[in-house]
Amino acid sequence: MPLQMIRKIKSRIVRFFCEFGGYKVAHKLTRNQPKIMMMHRFSEEPKAGYIDRKILRQQIAILKRDFNVIAFSELIKCLKNKENPPENSIVLTVDDGYMDMYSFAFEEFNRAGLPVTLFVTTGFIDGKCWLWPDRVSMLLKLASSDVEVNFFKENKILPSGLYSSWQAINNYLLPLSLTEKNHWIDQCAEKNNILLPKEVPDEYAPLTWTQIQELSESNVEIGAHTVNHPILSAERLSDVEFELVESKRRLESMINKAVSSFCYPNGQLDDFNSETEAMVEKANYQAAVMANCDCLSMDNPFALPRFAIGDDMYQFKKSVYGVQWIAKSFTT
Ligand SMILES: [Zn+2]
Image (cartoon, rainbow, N blue to C red; front, side, top):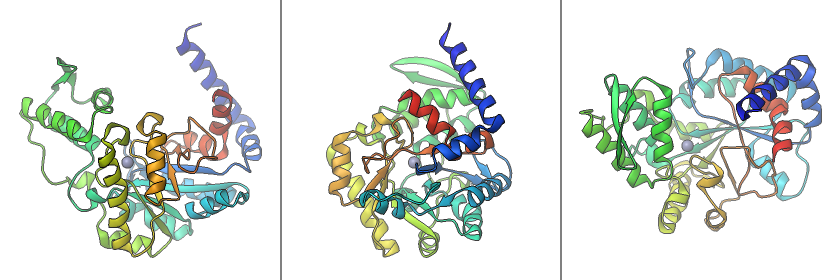
C-alpha cells in the first residue's frame, strides 16, 4: 500500500478516535506527562497562520477548565529536582517577539491569569534585523505573478501567490548560514526588480523594549531566542557563542532579571547538536526548547520537545489532550 494511503488511513483512525471519546482517554493516560505548547502569531480577525482572538479565547477556556497551566520555570524546577509537576500540566510558550503578542495575546492571557514564556530575538527588537522567513514572505508578496529563483545554480520559476513557493524557498535556504540566506534573498529581490524595505514592515513588526519590560513585570517569563535568529548548526562556533551569550546579556540588562531559558531558532533536530547543547549550558542557561516533538523525552533539559498550536482547534485539542503525544510515542 502506498505510504500516502497509509498516512490517510492513520489520520482518519485518529480523527475517529478523537471524536468518540479519544480526547478524554488521552487526557487521562497522559495526565502525568507535562506538555509544552508553542505559538507564534496572533491577530484580531481570522488570518492564515495566526491565532485570532476568538480562537484564542476558546483555547484559553479549555486550558482553564481541563489543565494546570504552569510557568516554564516551574516545570524546569520540577525536572531538575526530579519531582512530578502537577497533573495535567501545560506550559505555554510564544516565539520571536512579534508586536501582536502585546497587542492581542497578552490581554487574553493576562485576563485568564495564565503564565506564558516569551522567547525573544534581541536583534529583531533592536531593529537590527527582521526574521528571514518574513523577508521571503515579503519578497513573494511584492512580486508580480511569478518569481525567478536560483536553486543549486539552476533557475526556476515559482508562482508568487502560493504557499508552496514560500515553502520551497524556505527549504532551500534552511541549511545555509544567515549571511548566505540574506545574500540569496537580496540577490533574488534584485533579479526580480523587487525593492525589499529596509525597515521591518508593520505586519512583521517586533515588540518594543518598553512592552517587553511590561510583559516581564506581569505573568510573562522572558527567554532568549538568539540575537539574529540563525540556525545554529549552520553557523561557526564563535558565532553560535555570540548568539547565545549576547542575547542573554541584552535581555537581562533590559528587563533586570536573570534569563535562564533558551529556544533554538527553527528548532528541528538538525538545527542544533550535542555541541550546541553544551554551549547553551555553558552560557548559563538552565533549559532549552525545540520546535518539534519528534523526541518526547524530557530527560535532557537542553532539548525539550514542544507541540505547535495554531488556529486549528482539532490540532490544538490533539496536542493539549495528549492524542499527539500518544501517537508520537508509538512512532519514536
Ligand atoms: Zn523563531
